[in-house]
Image (cartoon, one colour):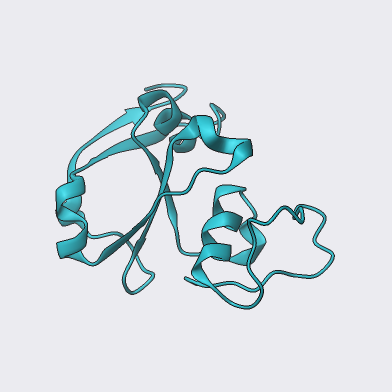
Length: 121
């Protein structure tokens, strides 16, 4: 989903002015960046910071993963929506949320390289 509606009483949501009333993409991005998987958004977390990308790829160092090197200049022409927000609790991550236009997989055309990271990488 590219838009979500907040659930009243969700204990992980603070009334801090970063959420919107009703269904919107901003809520989907915010929920994704906080790791609130129950909202079923279709965003992928990326970062321009290598150590943060490794954290994202390995679920915080708990599993093996892969880093995908993406060519940002190819995103728009391949229908990839880019949303970059800075929220207080994760401002250090320099997170860039990506989603395919159809909310499916990101197109391979944007990927320059892929390499393993994590426990074995």
